[in-house]
Length: 311
Image (cartoon, rainbow, N blue to C red; front, top):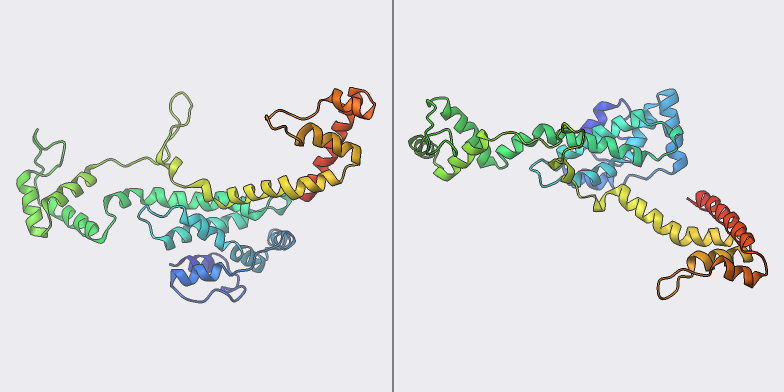
């Protein structure tokens, strides 16, 4: 089942909500199509979410899903390189997206992209956990062929283990040679596959240890968070607040309050030290230092309100 087919079967909404995704099985065509899907404004997202929650409007659910399919593609790319097909990762991520849409509450005051991120990652993590053992055993076509043939061969052998090869394989030297000859592979490949088959499973997400602290496992470094969509958006939002937002907040102040804030917090000296002190500003404006502190506190409160409205 393709990633798009997962979307179509989970919801009874029209399969091609906005008519942009072609009925093709090619992954590149799918990715190209979802990247062309229109993004929803906050008002549209809230409207569709309320229609789904209050009226069970499946067409609204479909539009919420379709507009966030590109997010799934972006997140799934972070999990490439583990021997799992990109299409399968996208499919599992789409399942997580649909679960997020179903449970999304517009009254919570968060965007769907932030809420859905957890569900998308959870489904992809679960998929990797289910398939990690298989991935480690055989990651190529030739390895998979050797894996299944070796299992069949071993059923005809009597287990022979001695002190010389117990650490390496359950097969004896003669059995290894026989398997390599019968399957027309190198004996080193037989040994390696036998070691993989005899190895223990790797726990990606270990349970907390006895002292209650969380144990470290491979799940902690599965993804590269440097380019995670939410982190990128948060960084961009901080940059905007530090420039346009701050300028707008300062312009909402009167001239005296603006100068006090700038001299106290924004005009950093060359040596890295802070700006003017309360007493310095008190001398300049001919008032007490306590009055400067009060003006500063009031200005900060007004700027905070302006920044919240801007965000």
